[in-house]
Amino acid sequence: MTTKGHVYVIDDDAAMRDSLNFLLDSAGFAVTLFDDALAFLEALPGLDFGCIVSDVRMPGLDGIELLKRMKAQQSPFPIVIMTGHGDVPLAVEAMKLGAVDFLEKPFDDDRLTAMIESAIRQAEPAAKNEAVAQDIAARVASLSPRERQVMEGLVAGLSNKLIAREYDISPRTIEVYRANVMTKMQASSLSELVRLAMRAGMLKD
Image (cartoon, rainbow, N blue to C red; front, side, top):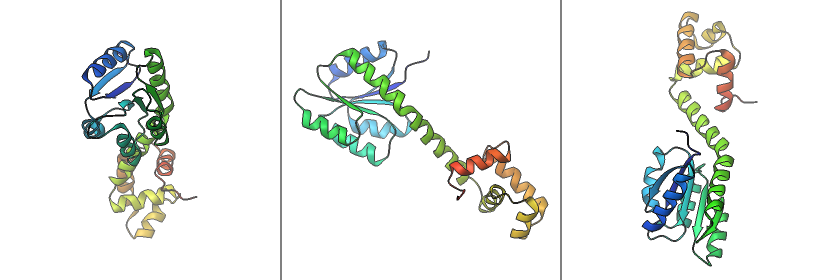
């Protein structure tokens, strides 16, 4: 069953959580509920990309503080803030901190679902790019110092012989390192290796 995306609801009001769960679930989203922002932040490293719908006024860590922490982590998750009646200054502050939108309670169901769909659609490409960049960085980090030197030589356009001469090792050994580099970087060709090096910022203009 494909969903329209993940939604993480953060609200200390159980009735509000239940009604949002019902609304968003029936609209086709995969919903996860949190009764406070701290529990959400603790779970965040293991969560799939999705839209956060958070109340602004909560005991402990409130919506504004949550936004500050998400901003500090450079999180790609879009955040929609729910405010009580007349909380316009708070809503404005939330927008300044990176909330994609805010809704005043009580709000129109269709408006909320449309807001979430658009937030996910707009933020998803950046989130995917971020995930790819982190994945490539992890591959580069898995290389041994010597493998990294060989990769740098390869993407600089040096032949096995030239790399071997530079590091005073045999071309045969370079071939072994080269095979390791291709495996660890998950590159099927030299052109793909060059592309990965560019994404990893290893190629200077």
